[in-house]
Length: 260
Length: 231
Image 1 (cartoon, chains in turn green, blue):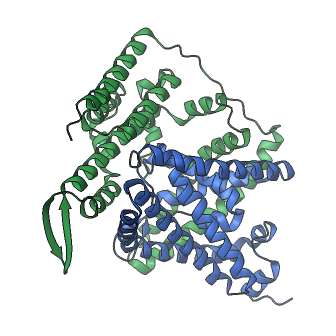
Image 2 (cartoon, chains in turn green, brown; image 1 turned 180 degrees about the vertical axis):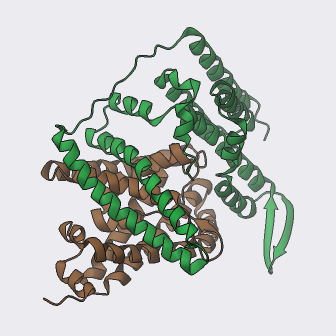
């Protein structure tokens, strides 16, 4: 739970590429992914994003695989519902569980697989952003995008304090664990509420101190952020456009040859 | 329960963004007004947001052996009201998507609606109604947090069922199925979270009741009654 993706992003070599280019690649992948209705473009995009993250972004491959598998639990539950209860076509397989009939139909299965492929593609795109772009870089983008100041200030302060409180929470948790605070269900319940409430009170006091500290340093509701200029290089544009064109071609190709 | 990246197809994810963004804009407007009136509220909101994030990244022990993450949105709704909870929830959901890969960017609109808007609104309404009816404070907090969580799951099932069904009949069947699957896994977790939230308020009232009174979450009379102080 302390494996924050941000830590890996900070040490990634892709960190020093243009933020807008990376955002454009990710946005393109996400939207092409959710609107595509066939597998080839999804596989192609997932592969490209995974390759870029692991090879160009130097993310440890083992960690990347673990990350990809982690959120699939949710995808699994959702896909199972779709497999069993969707579709009206040909029955592929059916059995009964506790007297309750369960049928797998061809179109339900196809839909579930498509949704799974989309989810994997989405995760690959999201990880490309999360593992190569630290939040600090994104704040500069947010500032340039003219979102309301209060929202950006609030997110910057939250970002800062996440790390402080995570540290506090972990040390409390270790202290509780070595005192057998998580020995059984009742104890863990008690320990958890104690941890949560102590954390709340501590963070509140921290917030009061933070206000005094910022006020005495002339905080006027805006923290300036330094944005480095990083021009997009020609090979990057070339590679990105090739990627976009192939994906669009794959999506289009499917539309011509509507097999299913 | 976050809807994962890439799970919702195109028209639906845009619809949920279209619903969430006006509420969020209203939340930001309220936040701006509050901050201009009471400047010290911004750092406090920031630490509350960070607290919700950290809480949601800790694992909560659950009865049926599985582990879950508390959402913490019920608590935010009780303390700050639903409009500001929507803003806090959106920022936390964005960080969760980018740091922990919970949820996603295209599904952010749907997740904000279920976890940042629907759940807190229900929690807040139950809390207000319960306090007006002068029920036991902890019971009200427990009910607000638990039912707020349940609302989140019902709305999530609704979002999923809507996205994958073609007709009304199909929608009803799918909605029932998604809701059943979530109910099995999530109902005990929601009850746990309600209990944790109620206990959390108990500790906070014991140690630092003044902040709750100052934010008009509870009246001083209620605090005195809980502490057993007679004036």
